[in-house]
Length: 133
Length: 114
Image (tube, rainbow over all chains, first blue to last red; front, side):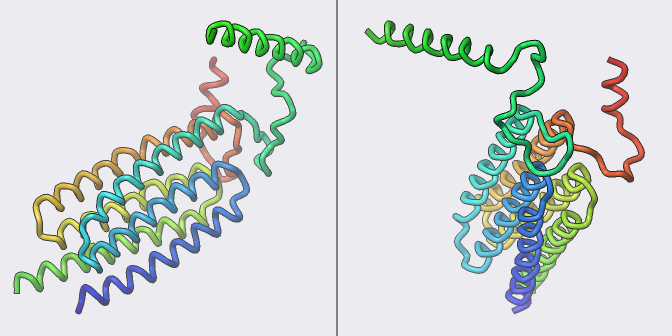
C-alpha cells in the first residue's frame, strides 16, 4: 500500500524530470548541452526501468538496466570523441558547419589539398585491390 | 512487521531517488553553462538512478538479485565520472565558452604557461 503510493509519486516525479530534460535537449544552445541531457535521459530511463521492476516483480529488468547503462556510457564517450574531433564552436552558438576546413594548415589552399588526398585514397584503394587478388 | 519495515524502507529509497533525479533535471535547466549543467546531471542523476536500482535489489529480498543490483549501482557510479570528465575535456578543448559568472579557469592559465 505504502510502496504502491510511493511508486506512483516516484513515477510522476520521474516523468516531470524526463520532460525537463527533454526541454534541455530541444533548447540546449550547444552540442555538449544536448549530449549531457541525453546522458541524463539514459539515467532517468534506468530509473523508470527500476520502478517498473518493483511494480511487476520481474527482477530480470535489472539486467536490461545494466546493459542500457553500458550503452549510454559508450554513447557519451563516442559523443565526447566526436566533439573533440570536430574541434569547432568558438562562438558557442549553433553547430559550426563541417564543410569549412579547419584552420590547421593556413598556408595550403583548400583546392590544393583535396586532389592530393584523393590521389592518396585512390592509391590505397589500388593497393587493397592488389592485395585482394 | 519486518516486511512492513522493509516496504517502508524501499518506498523511502525510491522517493529519495526520484527527488535526486528531479533536482538534477532542475539543475540541468537552471545552471548557466555546459560545465555546471554537467555537474548537476552527472552527480545527482547518477545517484538518483543508482538509488532506484538499489531499491529493486532490496525489494526482491534475494541475494542474487541484490548482487546484480549492487553491480549495476557500482557500474553507474564508476562510469558516470569517466564520461562526464571526457565530455567536459572535449567541450573545453573544442572551445565552448564558460559562463560569465565563472571565477577561476584553470585550463586557461595552463594554456598560457605552455
